[in-house]
Image (cartoon, rainbow, N blue to C red; front, side):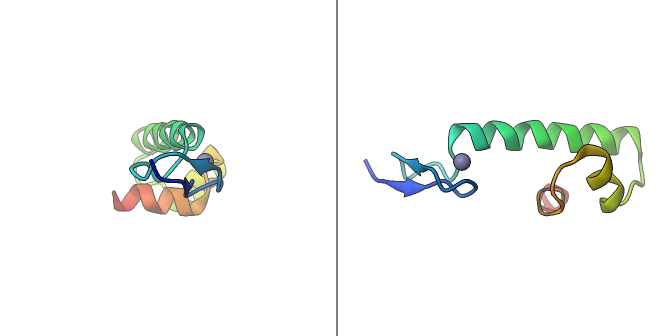
Amino acid sequence: MTLCNCDKCGRVLLTKYEERCTSCAQLALTESHLVKAYVRANPGATVMEVYHQTGVSLQTIKDLMQA
Ligand SMILES: [Zn+2]
């Protein structure tokens, strides 16, 4: 088993397979649902609108849009 740090919060993890700890992975999932639901309900919304309406960080929104 290897020690590494969570990509997001820096918490130490006991695995090398996960880049994020459980709570950050859960938060990322919740945020992706929020953003997708907003975009579905508001087609053509800009990144700034999504950011203001959902409270999800700009970087997270951009990552989601590329995915
Ligand atoms: Zn974390």
